[in-house]
Image (cartoon, rainbow, N blue to C red; front, side, top):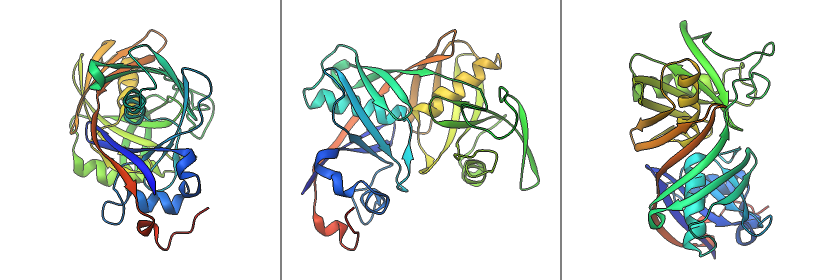
Amino acid sequence: MRPWSKYHALGNDYLVVDASRWADWLHAPAVRRVCDRHLGIGADGVMVREADEAPGRFRARILNPDGSEAEKSGNGLRIFARHLRDAGDVGPEAFEVSTPGGCVTCRVLSGGREVEVAMGRVSFDSREIPVQGPPREVLRERLVVDDRTLEFSAATLGNPHCVLICDEVSEADTRWLGPRLENDPLFPNRSNVQFVRVVDRANLELRIWERGAGYTLASGTSSCAAAAVARRLGLCDASLTAHMPGGELALEIGSDFSVLLRGPVVKVAEGTLHGEALAGVASR
């Protein structure tokens, strides 16, 4: 039996598991089965608790539902922080979580109902994102998709983002253009994709295509990247709210484009996965 806990952050749901209890099943075929909403538990991804680095310094891996690995996830990290609080491993004080996309600082607030994460600094440098071509800040560039010319900017918080400022945003456009942009050769590591409407200087409306997961109701890193791009282009203020189908996130953008993210987390369920659910999937 393999224990798990499930949470959602604005409809973006993750399972939290301990690497020591799931070691033989943290590979792509098993992750795809577990995240399948018909054949497994169902989730937008898996947060894996690795061995702690030090007292007050935790370590997490983020697995997408297609079995690939993400460098960082704002919603996933808020969920992971809430899980640590529920397990009694943290209190109201700030603590650090190390991810493949860098270290973040978290605080669990309101008895666990909200979590604040200092997500790190957003970069627009093509070498860091990465984006093909000469070294540059990737801002207001052109890209042709299916004979349609698009203007985009790119950014990273440890994971890649392609941001399009639009007059209107829609689920249909996101589902059509999202996978094409995610897999465009311009992005060697693929890319998350955000379609952004600037409502006013304090509010952004987003639709999101998440690398390795598809259309998603909300995303923390996508909100951070979109807000940082809008701020870099002079379209918004430093304090703002990202509005997504799943709900709202509060964002604070520093002068160095570091981003503080705050939003809700809800515990959904906990249980154990029966071995029968993994029938036909080989262990590692």
